[in-house]
Image (cartoon, rainbow, N blue to C red; front, side, top):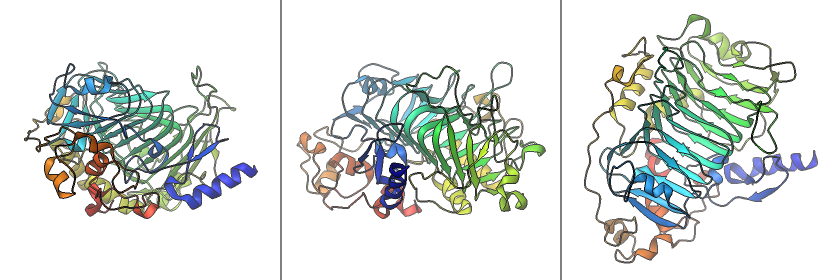
Length: 468
């Protein structure tokens, strides 16, 4: 108990980067360095991704082979993946090896869409500013049994399983993502948003929209999870449920045999497809027996159209098969907003917003804002063609990069770097913990030291003008 008390105090004082849990049990702690990138928050922010490794350029939209995204994912060792092309990659992508940063914000034109599945089968993973809009069964984006993963500003849609399932991992953050428009299986069922729940998981400023159920489903035996400042719109027959204490056949060693879930300061907006009996339902905790109750703290959530539940969130928790946490478990803090402010920020900036939003995300954000649904049955679709299929993405010439180090000549010259020296991308000229290539990808100044371990400096410079 003394160790736990000390740990909580240190986390509270240290901000989002104060400490890194190196084991699921929390019995050993190590000081964290800078976050994966400025603006990375929560437990997945501890990963360095591909920091210090080789820079690999994606030069074509092929499903595999030289110059493809899959080839970059297949490479071994730390690596940072940049894009010299824009458009749609028609095929599945699987991340097989540890220590990778995929920087979708480096793409030109309209950015990158994967027309297939993106599978995370590795540790130490950073994924930013991509779209995954699948055309077949299986999760659009998913992964299990790994550690140190952050997914930021990713748009996922159209799976006929779950759209975005990342669970039974350790140290995970999902932030500023859009999880939308689940499609149906052949029998017309299974339009599900996702399964979440990781031992030490952070989920903030994400948008679930136009999914029948699992928005999200909390995994059984999901451990410590902190969910706040998310937006949910137009769920069908179920908002959020799950969170049992244990998972039968759990492959983790040792298995996680509890669930502790904070659901705080989120925004719920029922839509045209939302059934009347679940319009004010924040969560429906599940169990498979009296010894299988998860623990939940549900507070400060805003439910549009239900002032009673907004005032007393307990009225929005359905059932009795759970334990109530009188206070939230002490999670790594984020830059938390009020639910109303988070709602506005998510609509403006969530999903693959760089280089620019595509027509799908732009439409969905506007539908949420107006409280309408333009396609399918009140927004719940059956196939991708219900919403017009995959948009055509415009490409543009990549900026000149004479030495192929991932940093454009113009940017290098601006900051006094040598545009003909490829070895300077892994240097940290200002000594702040981010290499020069990371400074370029993060939109920061490689000549100015900033103490990014201070929470007030841990801000996404790529979106800073928009209030993140």
